Structures are given as C-alpha cells and as structure tokens.
Length: 282
Image (cartoon, rainbow, N blue to C red; front, side, top):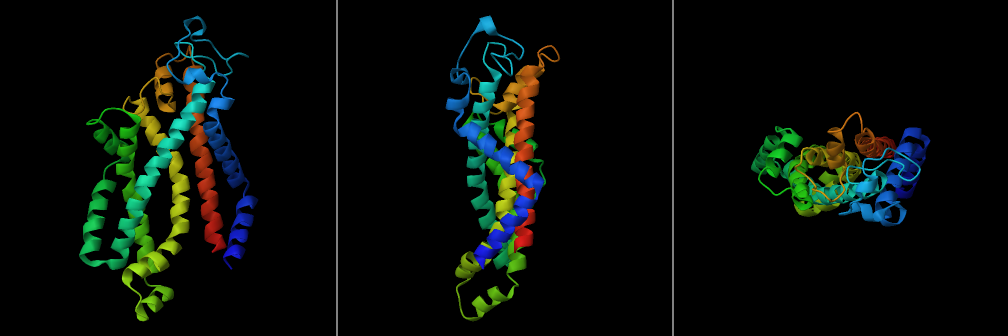
C-alpha cells in the first residue's frame, strides 16, 4: 500500500510542470554547491584572492558574470556562495526541526499545563518578526557563520512547533490512536510510533519550503553585515557590496541577487509540488 501511494504521489508530482522545474533548479543548485571546486572557473577566487589588474570588469568571455572590486570572478563566488547557503540551511533545519516538532507533538498530544507552557513560549517567539529577532540575536554575537546559524535556528523552531502542535491535536483523535490507547500502549509509544509518522509528510513539505526562506533570511543578515564575513563568499554580502556601485557596476549586484532568486524559487516550487502530491497521494 505504501509503495502504491508513493508511486501515485510521484506520478502526480511529475505531472506538475512547475514542480519539475523546481526539482530541476534545486538539483542544479545542489550539484553546483557540492562540486563548486570542480566546476567553478576560478576556484581560488572563493578565498582571499586579489587581482587589481582585472578588477571591476564587466561580463565577458573570460568572466561570464564579471569581476568584483578586487578582481575576483563573480560566477565562481556564486557557486561557493551556494555552498555556504546550503550548509547554513541544513544546519539550521537540523537544529530547529527536531526541537520544534518534538515540543509541538508533546504539547498537542498531552495537553494541559504542558500545552499551555510550550505554546505560550512559542507564541512569544512567533510574535516577533523573524528577521528582527535574528538581528537582535546577532547584535550580541560576533558575525560569523556559526553564530548566524544559531541565530536563524533560534527564530525558526517555533514554526515547526506550531505545525506539529496542530497536526498532533488532529491526529490524537483518530481511531488508530484511540485503539492504541485502549489496548494499553504507553503514551510515548503512541506519540512516537502512531502520531509522529502521520505528521511527517507535512513536516517534510515545510522543510523543503523553508530551505529557500532560510537562504533568504541568511542573505538578509549578510546584506546588513551581520552574517557571513569576507572573504567567505556569501550571496547576501555580494549583493550588499555591489549595491554601493549601482548602476555603473550593475553585474556585481544583479547576478548574486538573481542567484538568490533562483534558489528561493526552486525550493518553493519543489515544496509546493511535494505538498500537492503528498496531500493527494494519501
């Protein structure tokens, strides 16, 4: 039965052209990030490299996306910027998802004072705009990649707590849960073996959607000077650097900004396709 549902979900997914476009974009971005040292035209430009002779050059056959103020190839730095963005997104979600889902499941299933305590704390975090909260946290920390990950993770877990809370409250009234409770199954067993598996499709869909949003938030922090610091290539800091020289050196801003757009669009299209396929496939 599971195999049938999975094949049906995949059939519905691949019939959606936008979903396949999203899958293609995400696959391309991941491949570029993983193999950046091999596919980047100038891999050494991802670090502390200086070439003032070729500085601020517009797009050409030698440098397809042009060069920045100190002669580094922008296309190569975008590839490595994808690498940094994906690593940051994976670490943030690895931290935020288990915390948020775990707290949400416990609050929704057990109810009572546990529900009240967990969800009131969640509501406090949700009441603060995500970017503002991340900026406030980074204001007390040194602007590094690790601290940026921690700041974004702190602001991200409440969304998963709210999602898991609503799902667990709904699933806890289903017949299979009541049957497990009637035969004397421990509550933690029911929560982990019965409720959690039926919440996972929605959680996985949100994870796919959130990768793009995490990249956007992280790029926003870097744009403001609170994220990844030079010479580490980061899409947000590249946009910020080039924005000072618009419109004359437009390529320094346009191409990194377009790279962010492609990443966010790809993960959003993929997430929407997964949501539709899994909802219809169940």
